[in-house]
Amino acid sequence: MARCAIEIPAAFLHVGRVKLVPVALAALATALAGCEEARPTAVTQPTAAPPLLNLQGPAYLTNAQPRLQTMKLYVGPEELVAELALKPVEIYTGMMWRTNMAENEAMLFVFSAPEQRAFYMRNTFVPLSLAYIDPSGLILEIHDLQPRNETSVPSRSNNIQFVLEVPQGWFQRHKISTGTVVRCQYGELRNSFSFRRTP
Image 1 (tube, helix red, strand yellow):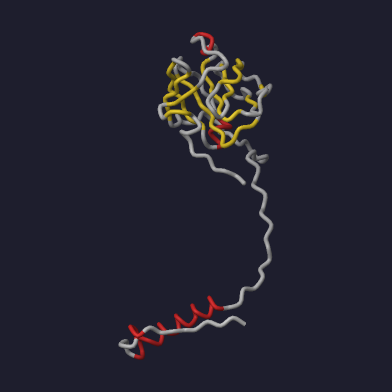
Image 2 (tube, rainbow, N blue to C red; image 1 turned 135 degrees about the vertical axis):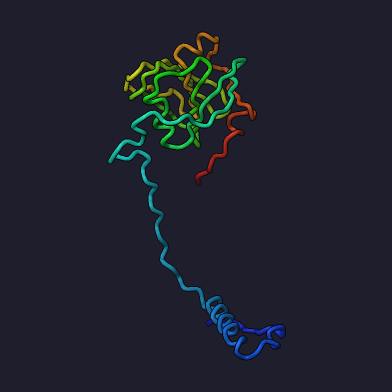
């Protein structure tokens, strides 16, 4: 059995007996709690994270989401003002239910880790083009999406961390092609967001 010495400092000796009793009892309880032998505890298995998609109801909003926080993006020599879809509900809702997007506006979907992505146009009335972008900000693929088409458009690459949506044809009108680097007002995309690392 482990032992622990209990010592009352001399600084407490001037305190009257009545005042010292509660202090001494509290110190004793604390010391005894800290001096017990370590008992093995049951190892609890981590619970699985809940799925992001709620099968009881939509994981997206049923109306247009309010304008999101914005950031300036530089796509090659071109400048865009992009809304940032950062939270799951913002990502799942995206441009759903909205009726317009100005020529130099965009929505940037930011994911915590690169993987294959797939986007579709459920409840989306604005024709869009999207770019699948790797962690370094390099545009790997560009696709046109048709309003209300629920056919998924998967990326060919499994190294996609950002997705940029713009008005349909924007990339072509501005002569932006694959291989173009996307940066933001703070520098490189990957250095402009905090990502939680998972073990």
